Each structure stands twice: as structure tokens, then as C-alpha cells.
Image 1: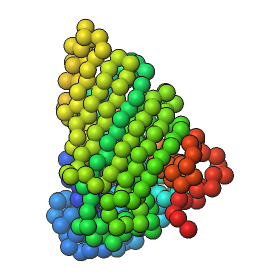
Image 2: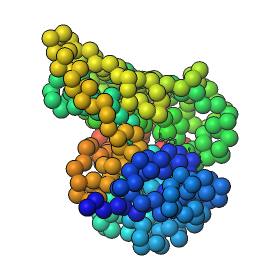
Image 3: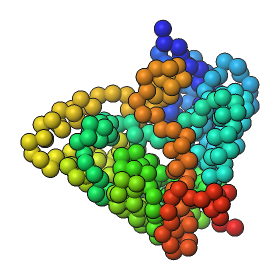
Length: 356
Ligand SMILES: NC(=O)c1ccc[n+]([C@@H]2O[C@H](COP(=O)([O-])OP(=O)(O)OC[C@H]3O[C@@H](n4cnc5c(N)ncnc54)[C@H](O)[C@@H]3O)[C@@H](O)[C@H]2O)c1
């Protein structure tokens, strides 16, 4: 019989969407606590998870031996310290992005996970959607060929109401701007589908909102498989969309534009050879149904912790790479140079990119 994993969610902003994800998997997870310093948010979150308790004290959650997994949906500056604390308390950890504000912090998390024999699962929910599943299946079957170029748009609408939450838009609270908080998902898809990013050049600016951190960027990148990647980022769009277009040797893939669900449909898959289109369409149709978004990733977490069959769970190494990419992008923009990855262990921004 499947073992249910006892989970506590900390932070009930986007944490509420995580709660709904666990609610889709009642046979896999038992949500025991919804923890938030704001009692109304804790109560509203707990109301979505039958049998759970609202609570404000994260230390009390960590002290409960029944809790096996802690899901951190806290403001970014708390991710690394709370992950370390939860690991030391013997918990596995799901953590929202960004996992940390420096490569040094991710390395410390990696060491702590090994020391306490626990696992850390960074959230990259864009991976879990019908369109992206189909794209990756076509890659695994060798039907895409070499990646030529990828074009990404993270064009969101973020104004004063968004920045009313005080941690947002600040280096200390958010650890960065749109590179760290918004485009991180699309950049993870690039590495997963077309190879790790090996070179970057970047223009980064604050043009839309009166904030400390960046809200616009134009990035150029190259991947290990040779793909040339353009990533256009702005929080000044009229309406929010994300888009992912990938030109491979044998196929052109275009994602949907739903900002929080870019992994889902409708994606289009256009084969170069019309004779293969029917085969491609059949593979795409096979991936139309499934458990998507946060629930998809949580199902994979459950599989990992219980020895079940995983799909393609984002790893701690991928979180490291995502933080390494952000480090390289800030370096490239500030010093107006092309930066190669992986970064050397003595890179000057290894302990963080926050301005002095
Ligand atoms: N994966 C995604 O698509 C996605 C979407 C939105 C936000 N996020 C990320 O999720 C994280 C949270 O973002 P948000 O928009 O929900 O922020 P938020 O500020 O709306 O929610 C954070 C909550 O944490 C609570 N909190 C703060 N410190 C706490 C503590 N010590 N103990 C218990 N509760 C505490 C706050 O009261 C608040 O309710 C951020 O890192 C953000 O980047 C990810």
C-alpha cells in the first residue's frame, strides 16, 4: 500500500497553490500544518487542506516528529536559512525559488542534506505540464534533432500593488528582481531541453517600477548542445504572458502563453518532415493527460521518498545551476562581458550578488 507522507507548508501566499497541489494527491500526502505568521493566512490555507492545523510557529512544526517533509513558501531571504534549519531537524524540504541567494549557500545546503541524509526538492513547476511533457518525450525519442535557437519571453505585468509586499523589489528581501523571481522557470526549461547554459551576455535594467532590483532584461546565452538562446524579460507588459519557442533541427516548438502554467497547453509541434507529423501528433496526444503543475512535481517527490517511479524530478544540482546562472548574468551585466559557466570556485560573486 502507498505510504502517505506527512507534510507541513510554511508560508500561505503561493503556499495556497501548493496546498491545492497536495489536495489533488490525498492518497500520497497528509497535510498536517499550514504555518504562517499571519494567522488569517494560516487559517485560510488550512481550510483548503482537510485535517490540517493552522499554526504560526515554524519551530513547533519542525519539532513534530510526524512531519517528514516541510514545504517552504516563504519570502526568498528565508529560503536558505530555513532549509538548513529544517534539514537539521531531520526533515526533507521542498523549497520555492530561488533556493538561495548565493552559490555558497546552495553548497552549504548540499552539505547539510548529505550530513543529515535528507533531500531538498527545488520547485520548478513549469516542467510539469502536457506541452512540456510532450516536448521532452520527443527529445527522449530523438525526434527533435539538434537545438538551433530558443526564444523566451517572460513578459509580466507587475505594478505598485505587487510591490506593496515589502520584501519584493528589494535586494535583501527578494535577493534580486525578474531574473531571480520570474525568468528562473523558463531558464530551467532551457537547460533541461537543450543543454546546460555555458555562456551568457546580459543587459539588465530597472525601467518599470521604482524598485531596487531589475525589472527588465535582454539576455543572450549558449547551451552545451550549441543552442543560441534569447531571453526577453520585463515586468512592464500590458497583461502577463510567458512564451517559449524552440527551433530544433527536425521540429519547431511553440509553447502556450499562460504565465504560471507555461508547461501546459496549448503548445504546437511542427515537424520539418510532414511525413513524421502524424507520429509527432500521436506522441503529443499521449501526453495530454496527467498530474500537472505543483501536483505533478509533488507526485515525483513522493515517488523519490518512497522508492516509486519518478518522472523527472528537478534536482538540487539543477537548483545550483539556476543560482549559478543568475550569478553569471549579474556578473555579465555589471562587468559588460561574456561569462562562461560553470563558474570557477573562486568567482567573486560566489557568496552572493547583492550590491554592496
Ligand atoms: N513557483 C511559482 O510560480 C511562484 C509563484 C509565486 C511566488 N513564488 C515564490 O514563493 C515565495 C513566496 O512568495 P509569495 O508570493 O507567496 O510571498 P508572500 O509574501 O505572499 O507569502 C509569504 C508568506 O510567508 C509568511 N511568513 C514569512 N515569514 C514567516 C515565518 N518565519 N514563518 C511562517 N510564515 C512566514 C508571510 O506571513 C506570508 O504570508 C517566494 O520565494 C516567491 O518567489 C513562486
